[in-house]
Image (cartoon, rainbow, N blue to C red; front, side, top):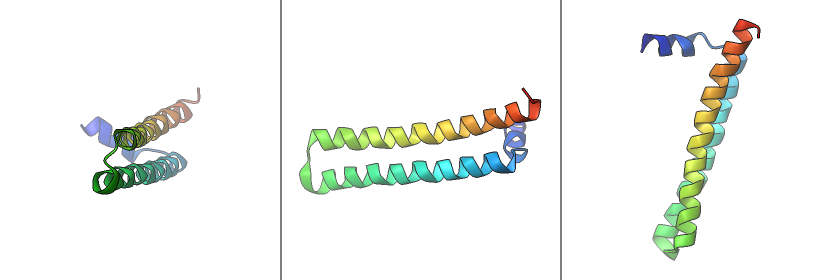
Length: 82
């Protein structure tokens, strides 16, 4: 656990900023998906809109994870000068 904590503490400032904006972007996508699911629950009750909403929420989690992993990898490559 301490090793993971040190990875995030020692991140480059630019990589940390990219990760932060990426997570905010992913959060906005998740909010859009959640709004679609809420609209479906309250008014329409269609399977199509439900599946689209679930897919958008999943996509936002994939984007967030991708931004975190890529930020750590890019920082590691930059520190090792590969």
